[in-house]
Image 1 (cartoon, rainbow, N blue to C red):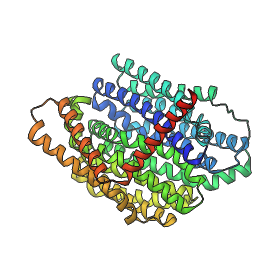
Image 2 (cartoon, rainbow, N blue to C red):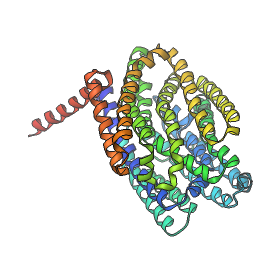
Image 3 (cartoon, rainbow, N blue to C red):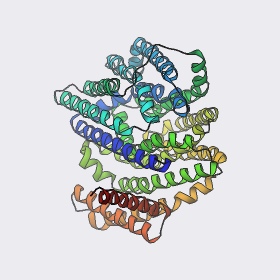
Image 4 (tube, one colour):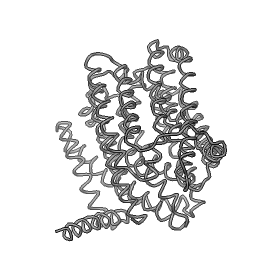
Length: 489
């Protein structure tokens, strides 16, 4: 199978995994949001930083080093496995001891027990990090999907049942733990790999020399991605944390699915491309496809945010609408930042990745300090400003390695964003002149149908490159399937 065929096949299975899993997760979250109060989501949001730290340890530097190591053997995998597990246990012990301090910091007594139980999930997750890495490196995304979907469904059932029984924030904690336990158990049963008790010092040094910078970068990202939850929880109310967290989660849902799926497939693919011109072309095609799908969705949902929140989450979440609309800027730029930084990882410049992330986080702190005294809306606006600045940083540095400047990147994606914006103006006009007296569900249906119809028609008439690439890929896939069917007959 050629690299292109592996990439397309990997993308299909990864998108299937990502969207099926996230669709189940999204439905579960919607049901829980309708049962639980915003404040209960706010309590959990205050401590999601600890789960993010666990994920950073699992998906961070040394597992990335395993993917880019062509001849990785069992000693490589076992060494990384035991180091990651040991670190996660050590951090859990620290959190267990510090749980009362965290509770006092937020002035929320319930958080002491919540931290101690919830943080177990990333120790459990560390038990499966290397197995997941092996499956990713081998591009066995179908296997990953077969294991993750049952885990998410089972965890969702646990959470919903406990929420109905009145367990409040504990229903969210047990949902996360149930999903993690089942996901880990399936990997140990079905992945086909088990560690041997080996820690090779030479291999540890090799993976650590590349991976520690990526791990630090991931940990910094974990901390600063949750910085808003920490700041809002400390200086505002638990209700505001819940409202902000739901707005951020809903905004990130489509973007994170597309971006994470593509990152999962493209990292091993990019790592196998040695020619910078080919790498630039591959990056350009992927970036355009991401923006082809993300930009209209982000723009249309931002315009239709009010009926969207009423239909999905009920009226009690309406104060989150304004946060969501501002955060759409973050959602639009996030995948572009992700893939620019991915180029640096492929090029082995983990030192530069760390440097960029430190600069980005320093500017984020500056924005927060400037805006915090002006209230919640100002805080969220500054988050959008930081997303723009971060995109400029990441695209500048990655562009130097593959001869793909910020201006060149902008010229390649601007037609897609402008076309989606133009279609969004028709949605705004329709909402203002025609939809106002309709039900919220009808406003959503008519708005999305109108917006997408105009958008796809415009990309077709303008013969945009991303539309043509998608059309040609789709036609080729259908043609090949028909050909195989005819031969089989």
